[in-house]
Image 1 (cartoon, rainbow, N blue to C red):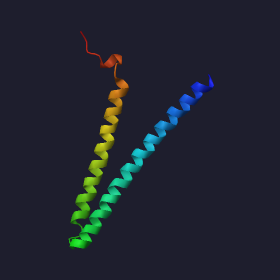
Image 2 (cartoon, rainbow, N blue to C red):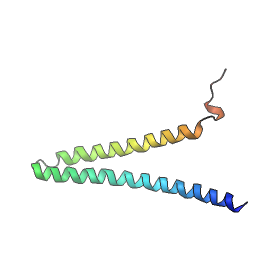
Image 3 (spheres, rainbow, N blue to C red):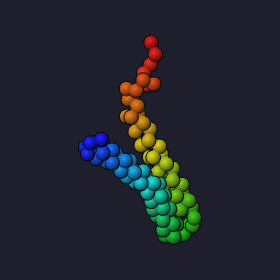
Image 4 (tube, one colour):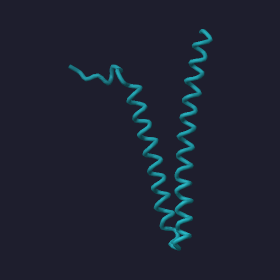
Length: 89
């Protein structure tokens, strides 16, 4: 195997790890920030824990939806032109 092939394989492997790491961080950070914002707003308005719960759930749903659609788009691109995606005559 040539140096260029090894480099390309290493680059693809680490690129995938970077994508996974960014998605996992996103799944943690977005709901946390939304929850903290809701907690702060609840303190400002004195209605604890209404906005905390609403924003936390909204953050979780939004983060999961983003990961799902990113995966769906990635799979569509990867499977384009593959034999199992062609329609039968």
